[in-house]
Image (cartoon, rainbow, N blue to C red; front, side, top):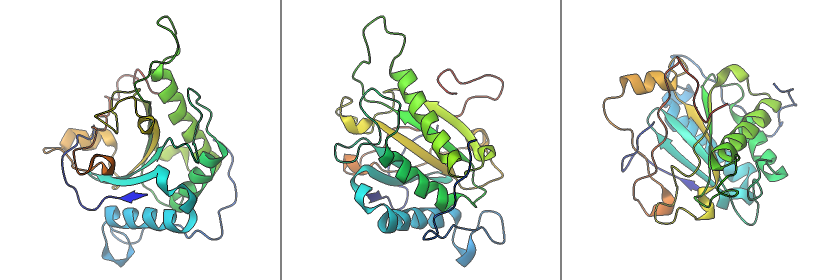
Length: 239
């Protein structure tokens, strides 16, 4: 897996039942001032370190399909399509047992945090169905994100922390030079640092683009993360 340090080249930030927590996973717990964790580290630093440790200790077999990177005021875990341990089958919104394993560990790790969460789905650019098909990559990416949300909540994540579930089809490829690359098929879990601010608030006050790096592009800029839509209307591709 890849852990991205710092904030290099730019990108734009745009109930189910519970199961018992894994006894081998120690959840993170916020202490003291909002925006800071124990040990005096920022939320972003602690989240990034915790996610990296989680993968190293509990998800080693999936390390080639997982990427951790940072964006302004948050950390993102990207679950990529891989031949060895696929998280979903091609053209299917049904997540596999491997995806459930990963999402369970993520839920166990962050369950006791107040951080707000978004789930996003992405596809490659290979068209789904024929020209007249009513089920396209837009619906597929949205359904994959929703499937991940449901599993996270099955494993005890509070639905109230979920602020966005959206699909973006092939509009934000991970591999810019090859939009048909299977690695563009992915589900991303975003954890926002400040539990008092929603993604819409971040976009409303942002003056400079947040920065990140895509490790698959050898240091080039990452695809832009979507901007949150106004509260007045529903997102066209989100459920």
